[in-house]
Amino acid sequence: MKPSIGRIVHYKLDDGKLVPAIITKVWSETCVNLRVFMDSKEIDHTTSVMEGEDVGQWVWPERRDI
Image (cartoon, rainbow, N blue to C red; front, side, top):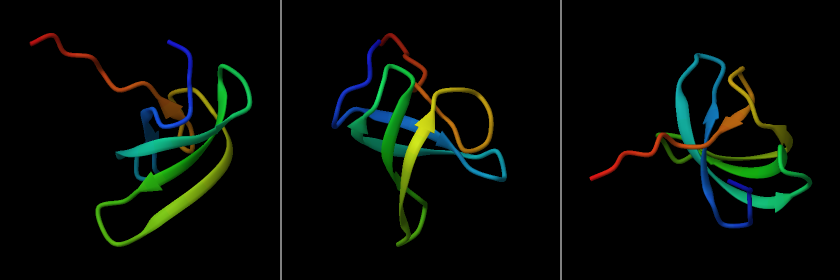
């Protein structure tokens, strides 16, 4: 999959928890800006976020066939 504006991905927080994020700008196939949605009123904007499994990176949500 290629990232595009408006797609939902998962962002990994410091505690290892995954939270939803929306792509707001695409720099490359692995680097994007995100609007991160916490489980509270907080909304965070992160820039130049790389795809990966580490803290502070994003991954595609797991797909489940229904």
